[in-house]
Amino acid sequence: MSVSIFLNNTKVQIVTGKKGKKGIFERAIKVDAPEGSIINGIVMDPERFSEFLNQVWTANNLPKKDVILVVNSNKIPGRMVDMPIMSKQKSKEYMRRELADMMREGEEMLLAYTCVAANKSKKMNKMYVELASREQIKDYIDIFGAAGITLKAVQSAEGSIIGLLEEATAKQYKTFVMQITDENIVSNILWVDGVFNYFNSVRLFNEPGTEGYYEDCARSLSNLKQFMAANKLESKIERIVIAGTERTDVSFYGNMVENFGIEAPVEIMNYGLGTTPQMQFEAQKAIFALGGLFDSGREENFLTNYSAKEKKQTVNPELKKNIIKIAVVFAVMAIGFLTALFLKIKRQKKYDELKEYNENPAIVSQAMLFDTFSDKRDRLAAQSNSIDNMLNTIETYPILNDQVISVLQDTAQGYAQIEIGNFNADSGIVNVSAKAKDVEKINEYIKRLEEKEIFNSVKYSGYVMNQDGTWTINVICTFAEGVGRGDK
Image 1 (cartoon, one colour):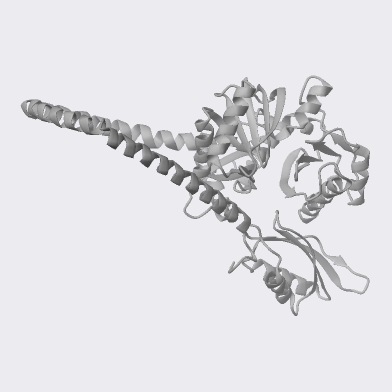
Image 2: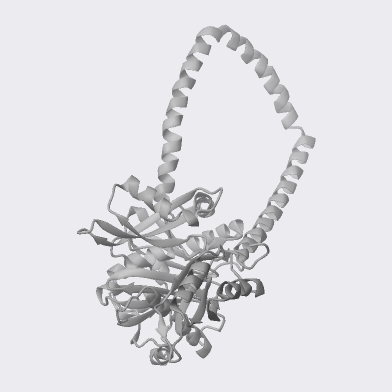
């Protein structure tokens, strides 16, 4: 039996079953982690979380060996990469170059990837590639290890859901949207013409189960619509498939979706997850954890590259060191046998003195007092680190303040009239509508935007001619991390 656990925020998903290309679902468990112990997939209080894991595993009699960890975290960025078919080593080098802008300075980044489409005639592959720091993966290994749990795989929410949908919903529909709710987080996945294209997660602020909550879910689909327009994806959406939900009024939600310009039937995911309707319904409520049981290959697992380096670093150098040590030992034994005998007698006397010192009641009492203060110091340090990590995470979100708005407006000065639309801090996307009498002026405005360092990317849809003879274009700007905060 395999166990897959999903970490995002407070609600932890666990499923049991059999891992394979088409995973087999047995049962789902949902538990609340200690408050504040997880934020955006990052464990903020390792000691308390390890105790929590030990309690859950003991209470549910779960195996501690065949365990897959699935994480939804903005610390694990990913991107679609079109690349030529080449050797494994050259492929990794190519991926690292394509994701160079996502590398964090001073950290060793590990790759995980999966092939979402292959064009053998053009000798090209479409890959979904992700990055995680070695230190982040090591933290997960240590935290679960402290609870006696050995991780077999660590993968992202995106990686897990791609493998699952390839064997489930993608068998039914070619172009569809999957929307997964997890408390106050909603994740949207876009599949176009049989190929995975887009994943994003946004935070919701209304209470789950309320009309406002479902309206927020429907509104979040507008990002997918903008993405399809910007990338000229004209395929019609066949279905909106929802998961992570209770038996809610699907038709009520469907009317809301239609209000946001998406005309497609809405249904709860009910295919490829279990042998009975009830099993399928229970499985979709823990869909991200279940994705860990759907095996898309070794390379979707961050531990594959993590373990490979460990082996390279430890086996070969150690063998070389051991040969040298053995040679030195034999040389010393041959030269210094009599000297060693003398030293043994001398050291025995020293040992007896040290033993008497260590067994002294006063010394034992002082050592116990030192251990007590050391434990207290370590707990305070862990709390301080948790606060720092949380602040660092907050600092990565961009802010649309007056200074940033001024950059948008100054860039357009003399080229176009702009209106700033919706801004999403989670995805870093701001929508801008630019209007000008001359198409070339808009082109120059787009180039000026692309030169600004505050943007990771600037995408735009086609031009529209207005009745007054002017031209309008919708621009989608993605901010870099931390824009609008301090000197950034």
